[in-house]
Image 1 (cartoon, rainbow, N blue to C red):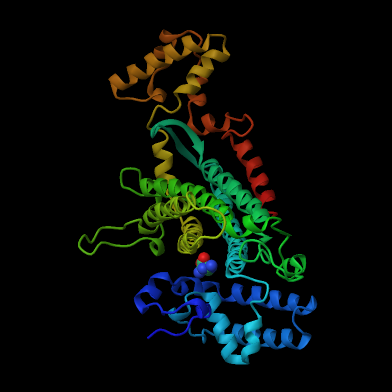
Image 2 (cartoon, rainbow, N blue to C red; image 1 turned 30 degrees about the vertical axis):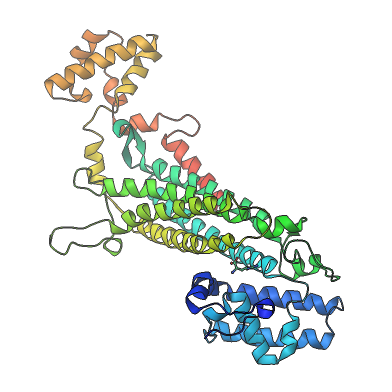
Length: 460
Ligand code: ARG
């Protein structure tokens, strides 16, 4: 037997339990309980102020709602699938608590503007928290970068050794990506922090409501100025999911690097024990599970974005029940992004950078070859020609199984008489990095400047 629905007047039959279960959203939208009550308090306060309910009715409903909120915070509210979603569950409990006057709460409102309001409130709060998580990770990057300004690190293109860089420069590259993620999330608040409340089911209401007043009570910056739009778009969630996807893509790339760097083939870093796990069979194993998981979880955030884009694409104005499918992906993305940012910050803070290995590594490659070509070009040789000369020298080295620093001055002179013995200094990895002092380059002086800019961005 199912209970009588709050909307059951025009129905002759009650739905069966299994159908109710399919239609219900309470098992996930119960996460919106606080936002739902907060929205209702604002709504009923407005109803009182506008004389739509008496002051006494409004106060009584408000007290009831506050009581339910306190219970909710203690986890003492029980929800039932019979009442479909968080909105009807709260309304039912209110009526049970304060009597029929509770039924006046829904005057001049629909679940359509109510659910949109709840979701806007929820996402606003979550995005604000995510902004703090991003800042914390940026702070961890800056701390590591400060330690490693002069740590020379192999820079890659095509995953082939290219030119050495300061490790701090590499870390700060992610700092700036995250800074844009921060800016995007912050910018999106403008569109999230808008009130749909008072749009009614789709067309507004006959009651003399005050939408600006409820918006103000809820801390919204503005109100939707079209009631159909207010209840029927979910672009603010899509915007969040796409910003979250870009953010996760950044984290995922960094994870991929951490995973590579901690292999015995690279051996550049060691992830702290706290963020790694062992194997149940191979005693020697230390697996970078957390980094792999963040990389993997990126997929589910993309999935939520594509899921909701697909949900929305064929829906006519205004509200459609399809929209109920907006929430699980959003909740999941929020949880995933927060969790990933937190783990990542911990991983960066505790990362052990193997400077001794790096020092040897950057000496055993040809990543100083550009330097040699620049050397000749500075002395007047056309760069294209210099490229050819150095290319030949690299080939000679490969054939002899040595590196550029191992060639004799005679070898160099034979290749070009522009070479002098100062090339041995020019070819040192430290010098190679230090001299790339163009704006935004990896030269130590530039990196120090960039660190200052990064700290400034963090307000430090
Ligand atoms: N649970 C619904 C949702 O999440 C709430 C709005 C229901 N509105 C309606 N007219 N059925 O979208």
